[in-house]
Length: 408
Image 1 (cartoon, rainbow, N blue to C red):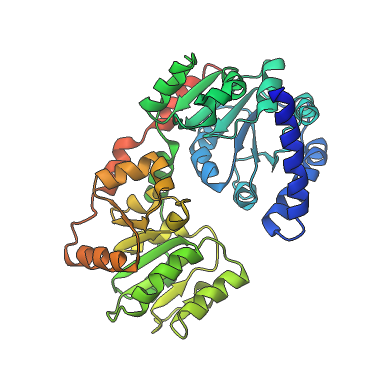
Image 2: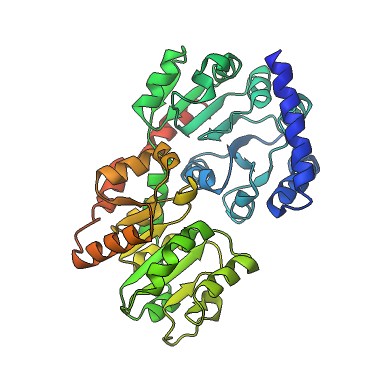
């Protein structure tokens, strides 16, 4: 009965995706991308190729997948296929050169998953963090394709562990191996009689260390900063700017601000320009010489992780919405990390750890932003320790290789 309800729910979600695609650009990309998946496979992927299939939900999970992709590319001869659910991952996946094939994961209807396995016949499936699609799991079991869940985190309030979650619990039991982030996740899984669990940590620590060690200087950024104290506001949403705007306007020091919005559409850039009239310049317009503007707007993607090296303080966007972006990218540069407070952010293990180590600072309003900012700039030792914290928690990729070698 529940299985019938699940399959019906997937079909309803497909209908909702179609309807929303008429007025939502992101959903339109997902809908159109899914329509092209099977034609893409038929055109580009040979049935006799040996494939490692990695699935990610969005761009955040793709960042976690990159160390694994690098590992497989370096040590094994398999073709690497990456599928994704969200349109946020599409461009990032497509430009990553170590990936052989990529496409949107089709909806989790049994006929779709059957077709995928017949066409691809993958050696293994690696699911990064979540995305436990029921029919995908059972079809993999049918075709004897092992599934490994990597860098996953489990909490007792998730549906798998509730009384109504028997159907979903049974699906999880068909996953070959869970490589989880923390001991708590292992204990929770063990309680529902899932024993194939190992604690390996989070590959994002390895990823940000790699970015840190291979970072390049950006001369135009250095020219804009001109040795002034700099605050980077990364992956910002309107909800972040609305709260920070007055404090930025009231800042009478020579502090420079670099804002990298989460979305870089025309409307998003114009919103920032209108929020700080006559005080902004876009990176694409930045001359080689120094400029008098206080606020630099980053109007491209892919630069943010290297911007944090230039700041004294980092503010990470999405926090006020309960969807905090990557705090580790900033913390690795040994700078204090500020973000909006929301109870949902506490589900991120690294956020709890950053706060415990006095590297992460949640705020509820603009005044708290000002107080923490002034405190940090007065005492530059406040908020230090992020780099050593990340080094201490790195090494998940090496552990993953130990387990992958048994399947590849």
